[in-house]
Picture 1 (cartoon, rainbow, N blue to C red):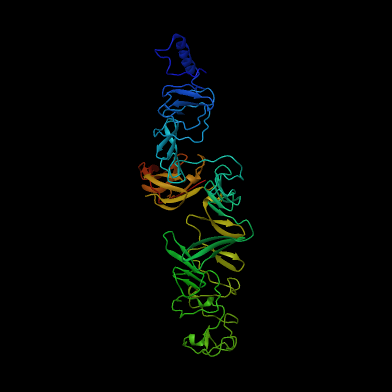
Picture 2: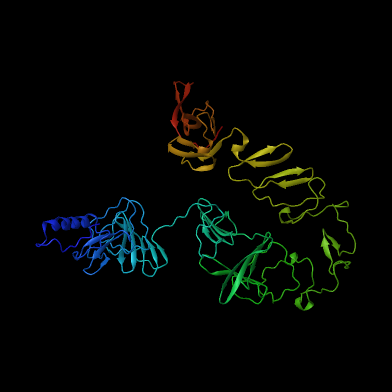
Length: 563
């Protein structure tokens, strides 16, 4: 090391000294003043301190650290660069590998496309793709996609945690609680754990409390034989719903059952053991505001009240019990004695002309002894006739209005129950006859009977009629009996025919009906009559002849069936 005196050479330097003095200065520059111990160097001289491995600057009196007044426009290192003090970078620091530092403090408020900036005083901003991603505020709040966080972690967007097993906790709430928190044990499921045990499970739209596989919207499970209880409370009191085995209990002083509009309809006052229907309060254990229909037996030790509302009580339904004498009104006859001990009528009556007071049997002429019995009157006013048509010992009158009577047994005649309109009577052999629909008889699909003049229906089943003109009718089949074009029609109508040997002109009402056309759904019925016309050949013994002219007509009534 030359360690030159940087005041030399001078104008007075000899040639012999000039060359070494210049050479010494060149050697100092070439070695970057690494071990310089010379003198008179220029203020601002930069030297490399090999012992400290750093650049130093001559202040004019001593070697000091480089300051911001000395800046490098670019610095590229091929190895590891170490800074013993602080490194201030006013531009961009590009690092292809890692940076190790005691601290890193950006001071630019302009966010880089990808990097860290000082977005506000004491606030860091991490950016990617020229967008702010993470903000660390001066108070320690962290925002993800939120540049103004108001909580320790403020996330604008969803959070996804994955990995681990069903026993891992994906998210914990307390650093001291390592076995409690929130995690997703399976797809479409979130679970909350305490003491390393799942407590609440959300699976799809179902929520389970104490149940990890809920099958309903809310499922609460007690993992023991103890009752499972839910408590609902406010500052005034509480109610509890519990299940023990297959029994459900609702613990409260009262239970209101309201309609959808919120009106109370049934109230169970459990504090006072009362069931109230249609009201909100009562003084009896069972209170019904309105009518009640009870189809079975009422068992009670006491009925109270004056009975003023019992306007249609059937006393025959009271099978036992005692009515106080004070409650029985005065009747218009003596009630002394009873029917079981009476031996005769107080006033004798006449039966068939024979006096009868009940003291002994009587004989009636024409009944149980020889003689004639007065039969004045009729059976229509008789309410009971003992006997039957054979032995006159067991005949019971029946109401057979608009019904058919049939012999149900050797000495028994019964009315057949009324059938439905349009049904026909069917014989069932030795069994009672019955009314049947035509369709159930086999083969018969429908029938109709109507007046020819206007098509008014008298009776019908599965068929309808429309009169389209004189003697022309369209019959339509109901869709329930259409099964193709194969069907038969039986037509019946009244013929009024006079003998041909009557020499009289005019209508003889000889009529007939026939099917003129048909389809799957309907057929056309035509009706005609033959008008008589007579004419003679002259002479005393006039010969005469008869001919008939066929014209359309409306029969009085037409009946037909479809098979």
